[in-house]
Length: 372
Ligand code: SF4
Image (cartoon, rainbow, N blue to C red; front, side, top):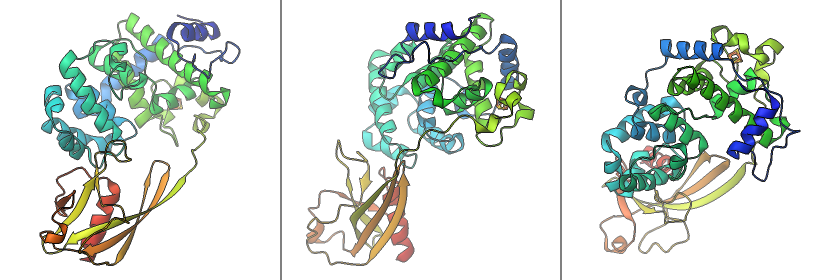
């Protein structure tokens, strides 16, 4: 088993983690004690006894684990489950996904948010369909949208490789187990988290414990017991090894990140509505535009020939650190009239928009329907 500070430094040298422009120097690295094998065994036993039944756990193939891990980025399990099931039913293999047109992929993703994930997954499927599934963490890092956490999760869960993982849940558990503070500096903080995870999975693997079970156990502990507010330490299988619990500061960790400044955005759009046929006119955001590939109301200011001005609806929504207020000017139009025949977008059913649309047009359509 490795010692403390010098081993964390060894890890920096070996892996390059923390060696970017925010270099973790030897002096800035904390002295850390790895999580002992006894605690890892208890944690794995706890996970095997009562882990939640989740669709990607039932059949952890590379394809299913990859899709689930991308969906789970920034999104909670309970939201992901129905999307995952629908997505796998529509694209049961990487070949199906690679062959699909981007519109049907965006539609299957619509509502999950962070749409670059859908574009990356589609691009990744095309690469994998040609070259085969990567079998190493380094290979997965070549796939669009896959970073160190996701590559570690896929290779440990689907291939059983002893690769570390650190996401928000795992960070919280380690920060508490070993009283790691963000105020150490970003690089030493992250390096220490990855080192703890790496030590744990290597120790477990050497002792015959499954890296897949261990890494999922960290995720599960963070999601269900070592939760952000009021951790359930009485239910924790490794509470005896928890330094924050001993010091009575579990709820104070992990220290919060500085929040990015909230940006206020105001937008004006035009909703052309065919009330009789219950259709709205939408255009697709072009490559390089914000919300690329998604369908939305056209921007105000364009020439809408043969269409009269109408009422205005205000909708509000929040996307990451943007607070967006949108003024939607509603104009009632006959979608089959000559005046609108040459418009470049599409007339979409308000009841079942068969294209990918984001939360802003969804809110607009709901407001139009409520008022019609
Ligand atoms: S004892 Fe409490 S704070 Fe420590 S790891 Fe367990 S749940 Fe988290």
